[in-house]
Length: 328
Image 1 (cartoon, rainbow, N blue to C red):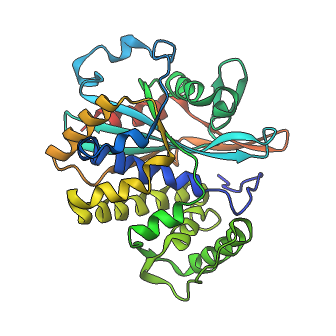
Image 2 (tube, rainbow, N blue to C red):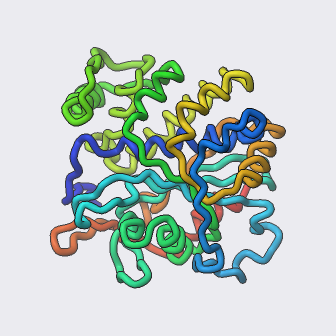
């Protein structure tokens, strides 16, 4: 199966895609502390109609799949998309799962080009559902097509992710030889758009990447397993950021929140954030398990009217997704 993409994105895109996985770690792992310091007031809360999210209640009545045991939150990284009249689209889409049955945190990437049925708009790319109906339609589309029970979201649209990573002291990444030139190329392109100076990567190997370098690393999609490996790079950096946040300890997190939370929008209430944060803190859950759908063996490339789409096998994909999220 070919993995060549027919539609190429501008090099400066992708900054928001990684921002979401950074902020969700801060929001979830530190909720209780933020409350004590009044930090949650910095988050924009936007409630949605959870009665109109295409959840098949019959699939989630059993205790082993109930929302009390498995809290699923849709993470959205939003960017301007030239393919849909310069509208906002979801550049990065993940399900964050707090698995209370097995005391785990899980992250599942859903490929943005997945060919899905979007209510009122027919079959198109998953990412466009945000363009047509915002967070609520994107959640509804994920639930309908992947038989999920997502009721809440966290969204980020940010151009200053590099500054946030710099504040955390950078991240340790093992850069591969074929990634060096691409990181530098992406930084050069982004510097022209966002007007900043950058330090080029000079060699491969394990090294601490600063904000601009880490963001460029997360954009890479033309070497290795193309867009699939792009999501893997994001999750790799997520693990390093989780370590950085842990090193700051409880006393250091309030200051970190001041640099991150103003860019966050969520449907979760302050009470819900506190509850989730307290659970994660008490159980010392720091490193997420990772997954991605569609998997390599359950999709095929397709081109419709000159645009690339990722068509996928529904039944085996849903089986694998549910086994990862609700299984052990």
